[in-house]
Length: 205
Image (cartoon, rainbow, N blue to C red; front, top):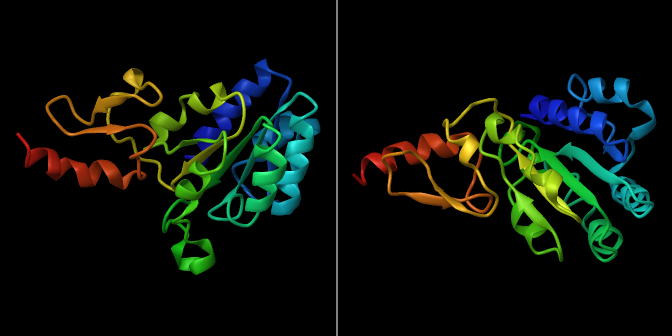
């Protein structure tokens, strides 16, 4: 999903010179294409500084994406996001990769379980949880005028073929024959979501 995100962001940055990408000095083998193409709009720093610097750049009229794994761009710099980004209505989008237990083997610090809930409580922040690479390639987070949070899992699966009908904050069928409905982004829990919902839809003819 991170590769698809960077490809989508790079395309947007080619068309919009005000788009910046800041990372927590990681993302190797994924972020290099953006860094090589837009070196003047790419920076890697520690997380609390990441949020503060992003807010400053955004308040100068730019659109800033900050990227890191798991809890690091959310819980680790929560105060900076709350005061520097949200309080000022800065155009900063937080992107976290490795949702849930994607990096669980690295220990509790890397288990990103609370991020979506906590970020949804920050004032003016919209939360997006793409289900798969198909939704990651869509640009709903680009349309946010102020702060936003996008939670990526580590998978590269495609859950269904309904992406062209996706509309932000509207309900849609998980499958054409299923009565089960869910909202984007509130009830998207990564690539395993479709695997869980498949038997549920069979149980509800």
